[in-house]
Length: 309
Image 1 (cartoon, rainbow, N blue to C red):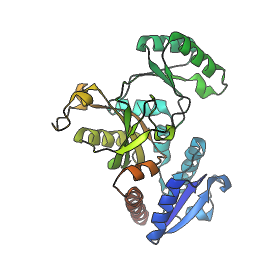
Image 2 (image 1 turned 90 degrees about the vertical axis):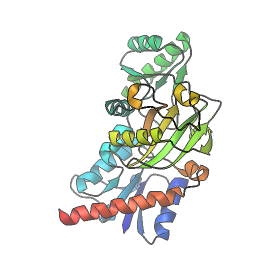
Image 3 (image 1 turned 180 degrees about the vertical axis):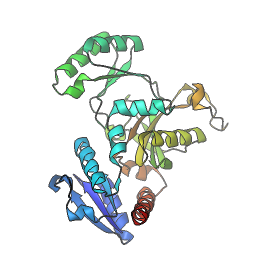
């Protein structure tokens, strides 16, 4: 098979994928998105003859537009543009999770500082203000006081870009010093890890310590539902444990129905250009091998669909 890797920088994650694909004898085209030219009805041959293109662009804008063009050309791409569009925007992400019945933190969106202050005051302190687009925990703020809220909202309002004038306010979840990252392929978990820190942001990108995590049935069900909600694909599903998770005995095997309002977890985000190098180091699972197993299956399925069309 021929796989395309669309990238803007080759990081450890991309090196792991490239190595696994080449070891299996696949042809791999490294496609620097900065050099690509996308016409309305034609594309570079390096893209057009790929059995599957894997989008690993760092910039959200490049990812969203490149995958849209590839889809228009009929080139199979992971993740697809519909999934990318939902995952890249926290508002769309939250709405998709809520519509699917996935427990997710209470959230309000406003368009003025005054309305945002009312949301913050009703949530109470602390609460969280996030950018609608972004990753690695950047520009997220835990609001502990009225003065802090006023300052943060003023800064966002004057930053200039219209996205900063969309105030995404969320309840603060008192997680147990960690959250859970699950890598999933079309809703099937590949591996999971906790990310722990004394800081309220526990992202691995922020220095959070990682450790393997065994998913229970409820977590697996939520990962599947959350993946379906955003369109499926190669995704990172982020969960936080609730009070119910901390109070339940680990050995009991008990689980609650997320629909009854007593879920042991809340899903706060689904990521579409997910990094997995930290997960590969924390888990006993060979993550790149599992991902490539799935990519091969996606390429085969795409090829069969073309032949029968």
